[in-house]
Length: 338
Image (cartoon, rainbow, N blue to C red; front, side):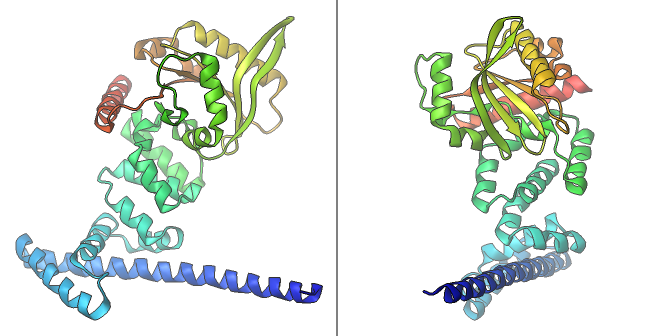
């Protein structure tokens, strides 16, 4: 292909691709609006009939007729998806905004999250970080919301932070950092050292970055810093693009110990003095341990030093056990702030 032909081919390809994207967005928007209107019609009928069982039977009967006319997509399950969508998002103006940002599959998935604050969290994070539907489903399955520091705050503060996220795209550390971190992909099952843990993370760096979350960039391992002729080594150093700060990760075996605070404070103050550049926020420290005492964390008041402590799990127990543990942690944290 000659140069002029190649250029013409590229120009036409770009036009077609842009058009396809525009068409896809337009189709999705119309699909979302249609499904909301279908849900509204079903809701109005169910309310008017005042008989839930009768309403369910009517929907089943209508679904059979719709499937014959418009295809198998329009079964009773699809109609109830539409009904659920309308019940969760009855405001047409909100739907008009949603349809431009998320696909119908995204919206359908989010609609089935019963807790409103949790639903708003996934909705806003999905929009901000442009999650695929698969990523959204994986985040929900891994209980991302319950693992964030945000979930452990009083409800009013959660609402405030989610509102800032929605209106200003303002990200806070409580939206980013988790507890615990799931590191089962490292393949560490028996006895291992801190060095083994670090090596395993670096060998599976892409998976580790996914577990950390979007916008983390790896900078260094065993970064040497020298203070008064003494060398210290930072296990892992990252940068977070949206938080605009360096993030130090210190890997520890066993339970958290109070002495870890002083070590991390030294690292953070050094980075603040010698590595932080204009426009960046203060560095954040994350101490990863295989266990921790909540009272230790509370008494040390680590957040004032910009330090966070989280557990990591290299072998995952059943999700039911994890769910129960997270539920208890959330209740404990909320009770503490009352």
